[in-house]
Image 1 (cartoon, helix red, strand yellow):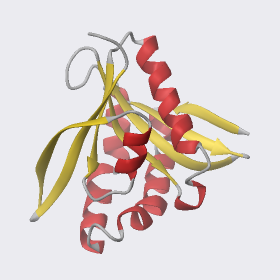
Image 2 (tube, helix red, strand yellow):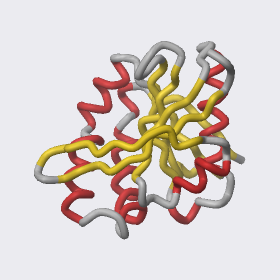
Image 3 (spheres, helix red, strand yellow):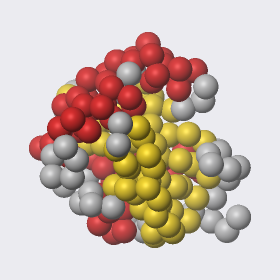
Length: 167
């Protein structure tokens, strides 16, 4: 049985733990080990995650048969009113292809409708195989951006959008 639960600021340590398990496999063919470590320390610091929850980010944990296998981080009305931003959505490699990513995405769509938002946006590394997943579920590439994150590292992303309804 699949369950998705919202996390409180006190529970985001689970996201930190899962990211450390999931990221090395996800990005091993795209990023150097040093960049993976740098980005994990930067994006998944427990204090940073807690602060994000306190300022409106929504974090969700997905479990199957009681085991935590993925997470999602959302921000309503970002970058502008009417949008839901998926900042983070990851599923353990061994659980991919079993509907968990789709379940998280469906949950994000439900939240979009609850907030009366018109579309979902996300950034994804241009070389990440998840690009195909997003295209298969209806996202379109609406742009590209290279984001300098320091120490000579770039995030080379597609900006993708899933239009839910007319603005």
